Image (tube, rainbow over all chains, first blue to last red; front, side, top):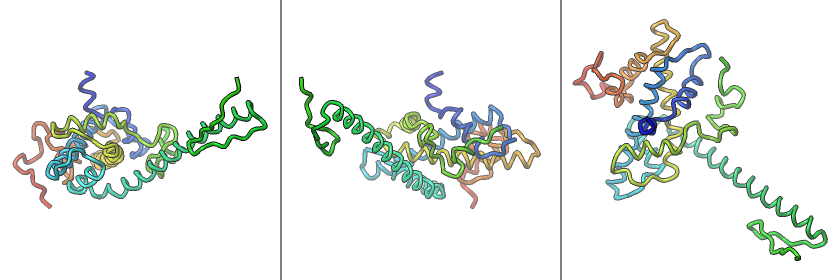
Length: 137
Length: 117
């Protein structure tokens, strides 16, 4: 059973997307949910196949995001393109902010430890947020 | 039923949620399905599953909306498998799904795989 489920997107996630687009009073049969779950996998295979063919013709080994976007257009799904471009921008922004937040919190922790151990000395942080400060034994 | 997305702004924001991260669909699973699609697919770059996470969301939404139109047409409030089958049969870009939703070839011309438009 685990092997079969690997070929499908989680039915809970599929169901959530479906519910979101339907009126609040709409009901969805279990069979319909599973059918759309299967269709989604078929969609991925279908588009990937087209993208993969293009890569082979161009002697490239790696299928990238642009190949998928191209394949979507080639197979009649070009109305998805705009939303995908916006989504990629938002995702990159999300990742960038997450990275900045992580860097900020780690350098803040470093700063705090410097103040406690050496209140009169100032050790500047290098660009990685590290200091050359060594603790006195 | 509480309408999902009303408070997190997902409905207008296009799926970015600080709670679960920006994707609604698991990237690792998408990558697995891509790999299984063909022996020719050997290497997949990082952004390809990401593009699919949005494309699949849009695909599921479109297929669901069209299926629901069939449900409404039949004066029902529960979306059934046959509504999905009807939506597939009446949408050209969904031709690749015909065999998946109509394994017996019911209601569809089996010798007509070319879109009419």
